[in-house]
Length: 136
Image (cartoon, rainbow, N blue to C red; front, top):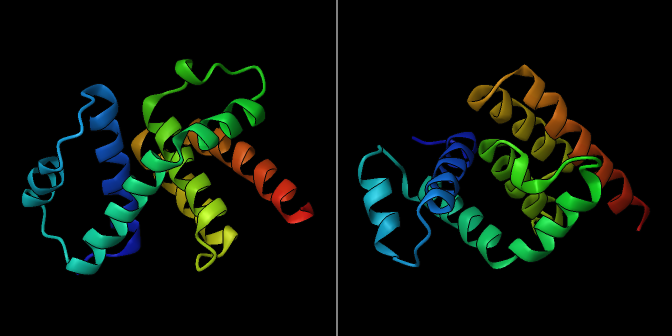
């Protein structure tokens, strides 16, 4: 049985793959998930995140640029950038997921895929966005 954490990690991997080899081929989902033991619920959650990020990427990337002071989005580690994208999608469009859960998951996934410093970097951006969203 897959968890939402697994699904978030798969979404990061898939977004990484799509960023390195852009295409609109829907078979990518089939090929990607064929290699994994994935529950239907886990796959649906992962696909929802991937599609949500893809469909809202312009707005999400604008927020990254705004909150990542002194950082060029293209110079960020690809994994960090995509972890942040997924978390921002959740913060903006998924009312069913508490912001603290989204941020904690993102920090842990950033550390898992990259390094400890990535967790701090991701946390700084997401916490700033969260605070501003709560003010609105």
